[in-house]
Length: 354
Image (tube, rainbow, N blue to C red; front, side):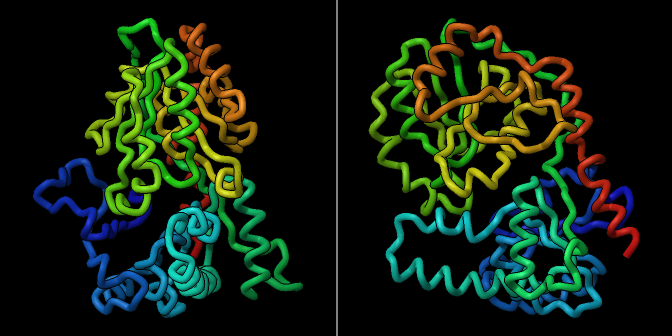
C-alpha cells in the first residue's frame, strides 16, 4: 500500500513497544499509538481528530476502538472495513464461560455498534468466498442493499498475504513425529482432543508455543488452563509466550498443527497462522478448509486431519514423516498467488480510483 499512498499505521498503546524499539529503516509507513482503553467502545476526541486527517481509513470490523470513532466520521472520509473476522460468530465463542447476564449485555451493545459500522462502511474486505455470501446477506439486513443495488455492493477480496520468504530447512533430531502448535488457543480450537491423542502415541511429540494471547490472556487462556496444567505426558511441552523471529522455531519441527472444533467459526475462518507457516515451506496438519480456489496450489502443503480419527491420522503421519514436505511447485504457487502485491491489487485500484 505504501508504494502507492502515504500510509500511517495506528497501534493501540497496549501493544506499542515504544518508538525507541522500532527499527524505522525497515518501515515504509508512519507509525502512531493511540489510547486503547480511552477509545474502547466510546468516542475518543484525540483519536477522532487524528482519523479526520486522512482521506481513507481502513479498520477491523471487530475493533471496539473503531466502532463509534469510525461510525461518526464525516462521509467525505472513505471508510474501508477489514471484514476478515465475522464478529457475531467469533463473539459467541469468545463469550464462553461468562455469566449469562454479562454475555447478553455485551452481545446487545456490540451488535448495535457493529451493524452501524457495517452500514457506515464504504467498502468491505473479505478473505474467502463464504465471507462474501455472509456480507451480501448482511447488507440487506442493515438496509445497505435493496432491489436497486443487487450485485453492486462494494466487496473486495483481499486474501491474507505472505512475504517473499525463503524455504526453511528442517532438522528435528528425533525419529518421532515432532509437531508445533504456534499461537493462542482460542475457544474454537480443540487442544484437549489433540493432547489426548498425542499422549497415547509414543511416536509423536508436541510443543505448544505462544498460547497465551498478549491482550486477552485472562479470557482465552483460562478456558483451557486446567487442561494444560493436567498434562502428564513428557512428550508434550507448554510455552506460554510469543517468540521473536518465530519462523526459526519451524526449523525444529516436522510440521505445524491446528485442530479446530466443528462449527460456524471454522466454516468461515481461514487460519492465517497456517498460511504463515506454509509461506516458509513449513507443512501444516489441519482439519480446517482453506477455500482459496484453483489459483493457489495447496497440494502437499496443508495435510488433512479428522477430529474423529485423529489418533489414526497422527500415527500414519508419524510412520511416513519423511513425506511431510511442501513441494517446490506448491511453495512457488503460495509465494506468487498469496504475495501481498497480488492479494491487495484490487484494493489498491479501488483507492486509486476514488
